[in-house]
Length: 230
Image 1 (cartoon, one colour):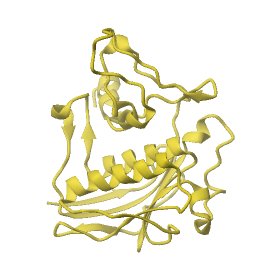
Image 2 (cartoon, rainbow, N blue to C red):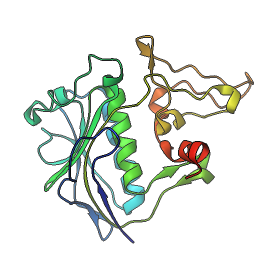
Image 3 (cartoon, rainbow, N blue to C red):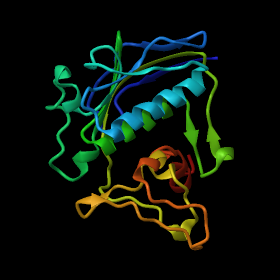
């Protein structure tokens, strides 16, 4: 199965056309390595490893995570992690919602998944995975869709930020376990700090939503269905 994605301007992206197509894997072998900056934070490194793990599951390949300047490979990080890319002017974080801005841009020799902050980098990673077919509709492995695509390539040029500063699914709607918040991108900075304290009803529950590194992947697909039926 070959997955070929072309993502032009998304909701918040002013770009008129997708970037050049870049190969990520061919015949179950990686064509790119995943790159983080030399001074990348542990959270960014963890996001890069998540991308490597899931791309590996999708393509049946082992993706390497290495340090670099971002000019080749799948660059995962913030503008300050990759000064050579000169992206600070495209991603500004002073405004509250801007701290979640991220850029996905394919190039002939790689791809940028660059966020204004560490939180935005996580959003970029899960958006990229969404664009190559990954889905997580509800908590639990039965609601997770990991496609099989030994030949994987993408063309994308999108800049995104949330339409709402504060987004949350409260525990009254059910228990949302660790990692779901990052996958859905729902728990976000509230009152100047990251809100990551949603607890299930039962104190004995083994489900504890206390990590924003977990809430970005169902993305809009499930909510779109609930609110529009599409």
